[in-house]
Length: 137
Image 1 (cartoon, rainbow, N blue to C red):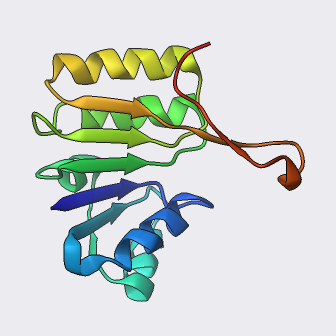
Image 2: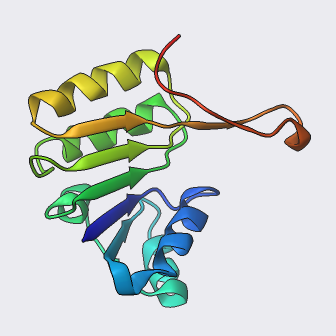
């Protein structure tokens, strides 16, 4: 199974690292817009560096994103939707609006793929824990 992880920031780095600890079960490819970051991640964890969103998601059964805001998610979606395979699942952990998550989900449905808005948000204090969002208001 091929899994693509896009966005290697504060959360994406660790999610991808967790997946890499099970590399015997799947093939992992990573991409980030920050020059050299994906290469650094692969040096530490193994896997493959993609040179674009499209090359990362082509052939992936699962795509995981962890992006900082709506603008970044829209940019990734513009490159991802035409390249994603039919039947693939995109799990988005980005901190974005429910409006955008619904719009991206509709685009994925039209591409015969699946979208799960699974954003993660920390409370004002870490002790408040982490909440999962599901795209509903």
